[in-house]
Image 1 (tube, rainbow, N blue to C red):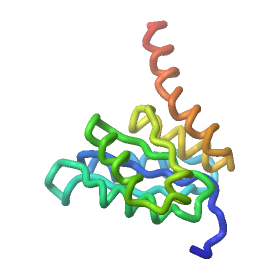
Image 2 (cartoon, rainbow, N blue to C red; image 1 turned 180 degrees about the vertical axis):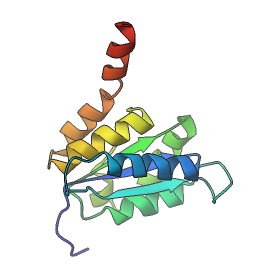
Image 3 (tube, one colour; image 1 turned 135 degrees about the horizontal axis):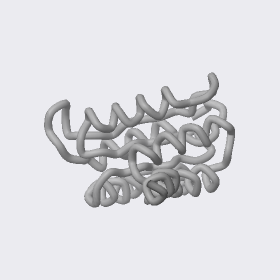
Image 4 (cartoon, rainbow, N blue to C red; image 1 turned 30 degrees about the vertical axis):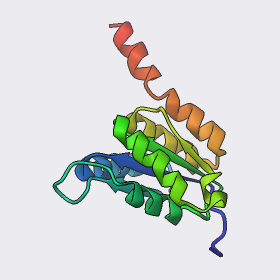
Length: 143
């Protein structure tokens, strides 16, 4: 891949294609400025069948190969398994740039996209995404 580095890319892995696309759309629309990090969705087995596919996840990550780092957000347990298996299909150079996140899918996608749009490094984007539920927890604890 001869493309220039693109900062941090985000891959959303969901059992539902509709949910994955909606999370990506919401994250993209919440960005404060024109800088949009690349976001790929690997979700559902097709338009209507729920599930995850390690080959589709691998292909989505591979599209991010020119990024400096790649954050993978997952919705449920078997999405983690698909993401982990996807890493085995990848060139080690690309796989070494991937972090599979424990962040919540929707909130994490929004925070990750905002942080990535600022040019933050993968470690910072991942750490902030993992704290994405803190504002909700704080707000609901004070009610």
